[in-house]
Length: 529
Image 1 (cartoon, rainbow, N blue to C red):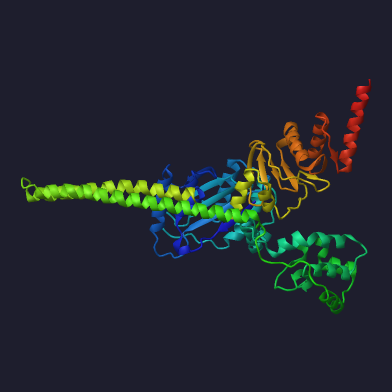
Image 2 (cartoon, rainbow, N blue to C red):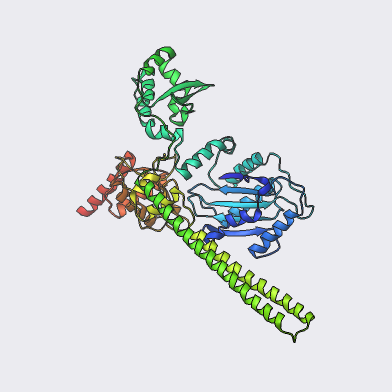
């Protein structure tokens, strides 16, 4: 579970209504929203509660800081806590920083791989009209989050480390949302495999390691008590342990002994790099040109419709004014009406004109909003997601440039040979995420996440029929030779399912393959009688 406080870009210009509209996804008819509720508010209608909160905030005009506290609580991709658990987490988190009695809107989103909740809290006390001060709120929230993970049996997250590494996480988010490659991703994608190959060979030396790094315009440097991998031509570096634990200073010194820096520098200076890091998008292809053309056409169509809407609006405004002006002139020329009566009629005409114009202004505004919504600008990532949903394999490959690593104890299927296809299966409800992973929801409690190079399985109680469906996807995607990781219960259920439905599958896990062979021999013996 990750708890993150989101600060407004400009505290003085923060708008509670704008934030509420965003998290409720009102522009898209609440497509993202699974459920929402208000706390400590007086009404049932969304608009009335938002107005009440805004009125409360307006009662304190002295405060210059942000009057709204925006908190996001996000869960792991294989976690699906109930609404009751989420509400308890929300209550205890806010209680820990003294905001449990404040007016707030809570919205649960399930439109991404990670179920998450947005909480928009009014910091102005509705009774005293003073703002709530929150010293050490981040640290308090992280500690409470750790306690709640234990209470609700959620995966444990290193919250203190998360707080210290927020900038690093922001860079990872930027890569996912924009496609801009950072230095760490580039090293992982281009050089990591060859570096690890050198480290796996017991006969290698400092010279071999430095030569390999130099091919990619990289070198190993001491920094503090550890090592960093830095670019030789640019002022960029990353922790060496981000690429491999074997690159730690202690392990390398123990393995290779003391290094002669001058001799190594002389060697690598003679090596011309084959690859160099450049800050550029990792997604550009023919699809990039298609995307730019697509957005250009959309913009042209939007401008045409907006010009048309404006012409209709101005024409209608002119006709309304003209209509009521005729009424006024008739009244003015009518000598049978007294001066006092005429003044009353003029007033009625003005009010009627304003009312008519106001009614149609609302209609025209809705028409403009509909145009903006229909032709809103897509990010390149969102464009690739839409293309992927139509079956475009190149778009899906572009999203999956960075290969995720399998984490310990995850239930997964992967290929032994490394071969795979990027087919999108018509299987359950599917969602394509910005990192290229595809979530197939089997039901409310079970899902499969296609990470490209492996399938991550989250099946409630390892039900046999659901394991069978996932096995069929794995075979279609990776072939019959499968590398399976996970719990012993999961592996056992996989073997039983393969045996029960007589699937042609070979396991990389020797123990699993032995058990499968024993089952096969038992069946052969039973058939021989």
